[in-house]
Every structure is written in C-alpha cells, then in structure tokens.
Image (cartoon, rainbow, N blue to C red; front, side, top):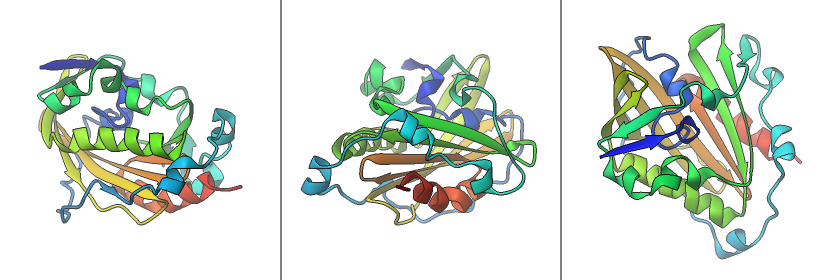
Length: 233
C-alpha cells in the first residue's frame, strides 16, 4: 500500500528532511542499542488538565541559537521541511491506518510551532534540526505517542523521494529522563549501498514538545540544552 505524504510529515512519520540530506553519504552502522520503549513517562490527570499553550512567536524565541550551540554551526536558510515535497511511504500499513491527515503530519499539526535547522562545520552530512510545539499536555502526548507507535511498528519499510528509493530501518532507543515524557528512535536509510543514520528524540515538558533530529552525536550533545532553553521563563 502506498501512502503519499508531504515532507511536513517527515519529522515523525516517514523521513525527516535531515534524513534525506545525505542519502549519498556513507555513515557507519550505529552501535546496537538495548531495546527500549519509544515512550516513557505518563501524563497525570493534573498535568493533562492544566497549562496554557505558548504562541508560535514565544516558541520561536525559545529555539536554540548559534550561541547556544557553540562555534561551527550555521543556520540553514529557508524551511527545512520543503526540501522534498513528494515522498511516498511503501510497506507500512500502520502508517496507512493513521489516515491521510495523520500521514501528512496531521497528528503533529499543533496550533503553535517553531523550527530551525543548523549545519555543523559546513557539512551537509552533519546537521541538527529543532522543532517546538505547544498545546495542552494531553494533546501533545496523544499526538506524539500515536506517530511514534506507528513508526516503530514498522521496523523496516521504504520511502520514495522523487525517483530515489531508500530502505528504512527504525530502532527504538532509550531517551534521557527529561521533562514529563520521552520518545527516541534511530532512523537508518540505505540508498544505493550508502547508509545514513538520523536520531529523533522528543521530550514533552508540560505544554511544550521539543523534537531534536539529525546526526546522533549532535542530537545527544544538544538535547538537554534544547529542553532547558525551551522551558526558559
């Protein structure tokens, strides 16, 4: 079954824009990681019922900057989700079952959002992107959980971006105990014998959802800072 998605969905559905940035780059295979639930933490009744979502402008002010990241980082121009606007998912009925809206990012279509991406040391194969969303805790939890569950239910499938077909492998990974809930996974893309590995980690803290995607080492290095900056008052 084929599900056509726009790249706004690639953050958590089929393939992040970062996952496709280096289909021609060879990356060493990730080290094995002990299986772990893609989601940890549970929203309490009080947590779900309280909290005021932030505006998109307020979220934009809480994104990581070059100063936060350190030397060697350069902002990527334009919208990072517009680089590949015609992507087809092959072989994942669970993603298909989410329905057209969810398959095109509907489950993460929260009313308030901001995003930014950076390259490191001028390399197109070393990138990190941050997305911030805000909604009620219950909606953030349910929407993110739904997408991650669908993705990890399909450990192997394919994506077709334009005329490029890539094999995709999804592996759950442990997430740091930050915020109220955590999700994390490694996405490995194989194209023409080359391999690209992207890490995605999502942290929900109250009414804010932080998603960091990109080179695994960069995601690990900046996740705590991203959460801390997003929660700044």
